[in-house]
Length: 520
Image (cartoon, rainbow, N blue to C red):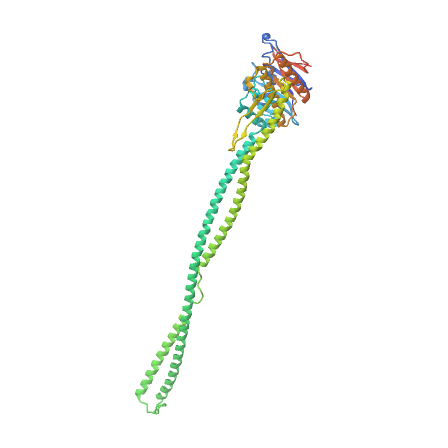
C-alpha cells in the first residue's frame, strides 16, 4: 500500500506557523480550491494550494517539483521551516521529518540519509511525480522527447539494471578472455619447458651411456691388470721359493766349509778358498735377489690394492632423475592449466551468452510493460472522450550488430486512421486528453512495478485546454478511477465544476498566511 495519512507544516512557503492537514479516508474524487483574502483580484492564485502538496515532495525528496530547495521554501519572514509526513508504505508506518535551517532528515525519529529514506519509500522523485503527484508545471509523459521518455521509462522499469548486468557480463567476459590468454601463455611456456627437458634428457642419456661404457671398459682393464699383477706375484713367489731354497743350500755348504771340510760335500773335490768366496758371492746375490723379489711383491700387492673395482657414480643419472621429475611437474601443471582453460572457456561462453541475454531479458520486460501500458492508456482514452482512439507504443530494439536502437515512440491512431498521426497535429483539448491518458496509464504501471497499491493521487490543474465537456470527462474518469481502485483522487483547480465531489478542500490565504479547511 502507498498511503499519505497526514502532513504537518511549519513556515513552509505561504503557510506561516504550524499547520496540520489530515487526508480524507474515503475513496472518491476530491476538489482542492482556494480563496485569496489578501489579493482578491488574484482569485485562487498564489494561495498555497500547490504548496500544501509540494510540501510532501520536499519532505520526502528534498526539493519541490520545480526544483525549489533550501531557503526558497521558507516562509517570508521566518528563519527556518519543517515538514512532517505520516505515510504508510507497504507494511511500514513511516514518519518523515525534514527541516531547513538547520538541515535534518529523520525517519521515525532516527536521522537518515536520502538514499536510506528512498529505500523505505520505494519510489524515487521521478516515479513519485508521475504516480502520486502530477504537478502543474511538470512535463506530461507524452511531452518528453523520445530519449527523455525512454530514460524515464527505463528508470521506472529499472531497465538500466539489465544493461548494467549486460555491461558487467561483458566486463567479466573480457577479464575471462584475458585470463584465457594468460593461461594459454602459461601452457605454451610449460610446453616449451617440456620440449627443452626432453632434449636435455636425450642428451643426458647419451652422456650417461658414454660414461657407463667408459666405466665398464675401465673396470675391465683393471681386472686384466689385476690378473697380470697376480701372475707376476705368482712368478715372484716361485722365484722367491727358488731363491730361498738355494740360499738354504748355500748356507749348509758354507757351514761345512767354515767347519773345515776338505772336500766338497757335493762333488768330493777339495775346497779351496776361491770356492768359499764364490759361495759367499752367490749367497749375497741370492739374498739381494730375494730382497728385490720381496720389494716387487709388496709393490705389486700395493698396486693390486690400489685398483678399485667398484663402479664410480654416474653424474648424469641424478640429472636425468631431476629432469624427469621436472617433466612430471610440467605435465601436471599443463593438465591443471588445461582444466583451468576448460573452465574459463565455459565461463566465457556463458558470459558471452549473457551479454546479449540480459539485453533480451530487458527487451522482454519492455515488451510486456509496453503491452500493459498500452492497455492502461487505451482504457483511459474512451473515458476521457476519445472514443475509438488508439495508442501504440514502441521502444528500443536490438539491431543486427547486437547494439540497441533507442527511442520511445508514441503513435496515435484516431478513429478510422490506418497510419498514426503525430501528437503535435491535434488540438489543445485533444492533446491534453492524450497526455492525461498517458499519465494515468504510467501511474498504474509505476505502482505495480514498485509492488504498491496506491490509495492517493493528486492532479494539479490538469484541465488546461479542456472544454467544459472535457472537464466533465476528466472528472468522471478520475471519479470512476477513485471508486474502482479505492483511491482518493484530488484535483486542484481554480474554478470548480458543478460536480458531485466526495469533498472539497479549500486553502485560504489571509493576512496571517495560508490555512486549510475541508468540506465533506
